[in-house]
Length: 116
Image 1 (cartoon, rainbow, N blue to C red):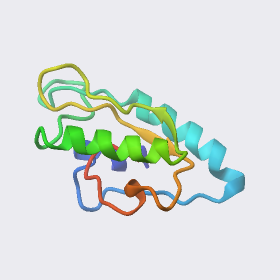
Image 2 (image 1 turned 120 degrees about the horizontal axis):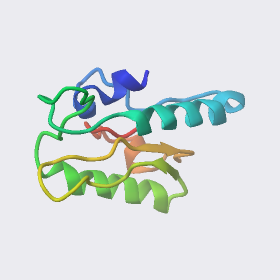
Image 3 (image 1 turned 30 degrees about the horizontal axis):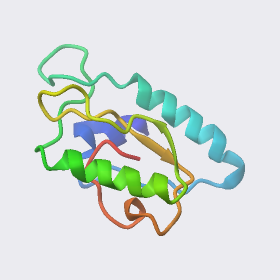
């Protein structure tokens, strides 16, 4: 499932954005998904061994940062990622949020990014 989420840096219309998981399975799901996100190799998509390339444009970086900040401010947990990678290009860490309240922007807006 993580491969589908982070394909094309999550910038695909069919990329899953939100997962509603039964409470008794949520901790295990989050832990496994977080580990899968941490294993994603980010870089130039033309390089061998790279799993995920850059965002489509620079505007996505502050948009993602705002979505993440809003979710965390509302009580979500950031389990991995959440930051731009380096200062060149539009690379962003595969990011996982957990326990996101339904009124957070990320639950109501399409991020088109490597953010779950």
